[in-house]
Length: 69
Image 1 (tube, rainbow, N blue to C red):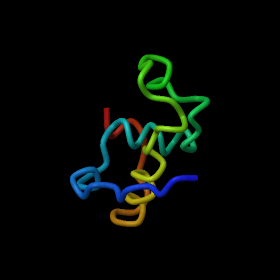
Image 2 (cartoon, helix red, strand yellow):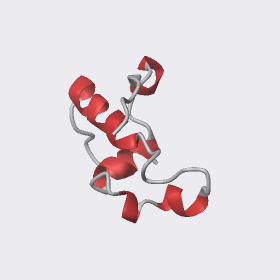
Image 3 (cartoon, rainbow, N blue to C red):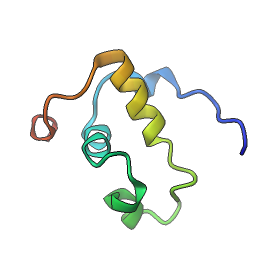
């Protein structure tokens, strides 16, 4: 496994709808609608789980999914 570069701080400014969706989806790429619509992203390249973990550490868990839409 290769070494991952750190998540840029601009990705950890706030919860976004995409990050909240990923969080409530359990960060499971098999259930991700973004991967279905974007051929250039594969589960092996996806970094959303790392972003979500960073956001939880910085801000805590998101309240509910509907607040962000």
